[in-house]
Image (tube, rainbow, N blue to C red; front, side):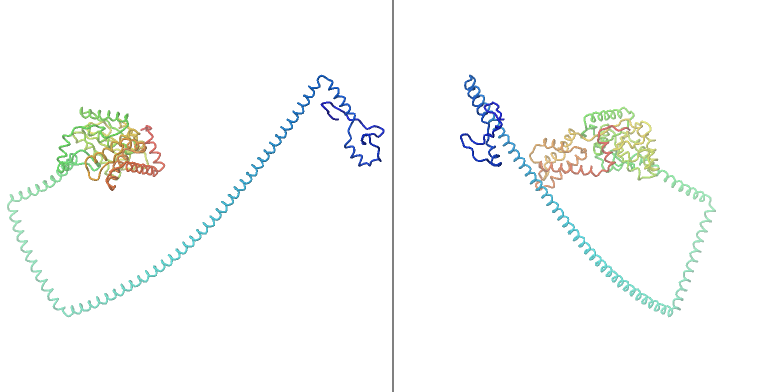
Length: 587
């Protein structure tokens, strides 16, 4: 079956007479062909009838009016088939190109894996070599250490032997000296005994004469004393006026001794309560008799001084400053009107200004301040109760009133149910609670603590105001840095001190920058930073404070602050976090 110009043609079977078309036309018939030759000829056999029908169809098509359209259609079909063949060829070429790219990618991946494996093997070999080198080095060190230990042992044995020989030599010398001393002493004793035997009669005679003279002297003294006492007794007994005078004199002497002793004790206690300072008070603005004599000008200046602002030089948060100012005004008016003072608890992180505010509060209200530490009570033992009573008795004698500031109050005012409190400390706590059980017009109690949750519950009942001091924020840190920069840098520089100058730079910008850097630092740490600025100037070669020196000292202070925080134990970190977190504590 075949197609010609789009027309289907069928092959014609071979004729019965054997004319299968194997012999070309107009040629004579040759000899019969073999089987292989016939098979070869069949490959070129074609159906001539089909060509005839095709020619007939072509003639019919030419005579048809659609012949041209059919020819064009056949051309278009042939063109379409050629384009499809070209597209398939290009698609085949694209597939081949993609196969080549994929093969290159596979080859590259294989090379990469091979390189990675080689690198890994090299690393393993390097690690193995390093381990071998380390083992060899450790073995060398161990060998050296064994050699050193052996040498040290031999040296110690040699030194021990030398020391033993030295001790034996010294002992032998001492023994020889002792023997020589014994022999010399024995010789001296023999000589002395021989001399004494030779002079025995002379010695006995001298002793006999001395004893006789001593006996005569004693007898004469007894006789003389007896005669004098007898004459005096006889004269006294015969005259009753003398007897009464002697008895009265002795009675007056005894009465004077006991009276002077009692008056001295009373006077000493009075002076101690009125003028002296109790042993628990570490610092006070109240002048003692000794201070009056030693510093009379300060006493006069203090009497003439006017009350100062309670928050002067104290930098705190605005809300806290407002509350403390209210407390200061109330305390001042309470003193003026002779009212009852209110007890205050100041709690918060160390170095946040609690002690400074207590001093300022006393000066502002016109009172005397007295500072004691709670840690001083425990070492006093049983005498702690007496010392507590002396403090309150001393405070009551003040005409101006006393602001008693107890720093680290939780050291002895902790819970009485605690296992860590001794009987003596419990007794001191009871004495303190007894003396503060009622409101007072003579003294004001201000307590400071970092851990107020340890206070005894009875003490919490004595507190009227609870104020929390937080670490300074950004605005407060900038105010503090500017304050201490003016105090420790600008004022000394403007005073014309030698080797103290300040370079030209923007002070305000540097202070703001340092305030951002000093996050988490307390007011005390920032004040120490100001002192370190002065130390930097004094340690410099030209005595000029530069911006770099300021920032370096600030970075050093921040590093020290972080190091101190790292030293805290876990429990201390929790306590410090609870103090600095800003959460109110339940007391």
